[in-house]
Amino acid sequence: MSRAWMQRAKLFVLAAALGVPFAAACAASNADSNTSDGGTVSTGTDASTSADGAVVCTGSVGEGVPALQTVCGGVCVSYATDPKNCGGCGNVCPEGTVCAWGHCGKNCPIGQVPCGQTCSTLAFDSDNCGSCGTQCAKGLSCHNGSCGCATGLTYCNSACVDRKKDPSNCGACGNVCAPGARCVDGACEACPAGQDICNPGPSARCSDFKTSPVDCGSCDNACEADEICSNGTCSCGPALTKCGTACVNTKFDAANCGACGNSCSSGKCQNGQCN
Image (cartoon, rainbow, N blue to C red; front, side, top):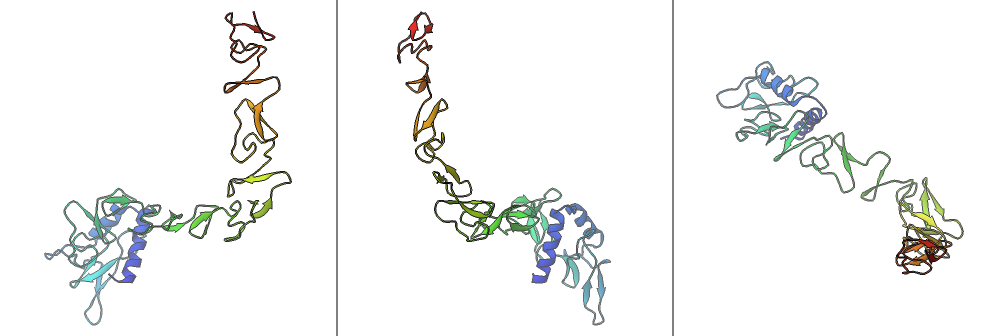
């Protein structure tokens, strides 16, 4: 197949993937042609003859879809959709399959085309982006038949990044923030005095290790829900005592009345005394 034909065929597939009914396109192609005894599609109304007697193919395979017919054995055929000349003269698709973009495959729903043994939406399939077998590079996704990054992201060094937050590509690809700095709205920014950076990267945060309940003493050292961070150490709050894994008020806790483990049989504790 010529490069020009492949480019035209790709337009046909993208049109189908974006909503031009595949079945209607095939029907239009069949309506404009007839099948000869040799299994090829005759010229019908989609052909004319030049001054030197050569066959010239014209017409289209469907509304809004470019003409994709090629001379094969002296007659016009569509390599894109003809199951008896799929992708080349005389290439017959197996029974039960259809021809789409010059490939034999499954009979797929409208808006999808067969790629091998699967049906694909070429407009959004990262493994078949725009055409069967066209895979998007790592980090890219398929949008309207072209590989690219999602809205708000930029392709930098084989990855889609947010240049507003990524300290390795802050504001521009390759602009690396200094150690201890984070990227805020595309500008490198150091943490305030007394704070350190945790989780360097797009999710970086500045923390005060002395008081942060999620970074108490060090990054990601989180205190329990009933604890506070004081001077970099997780501990129970005022008037509470650590008994096992819980912070309790020994003045009123019947299971730890006056001291950890002192259980009141009555189930009542008042000012550290069982009642």
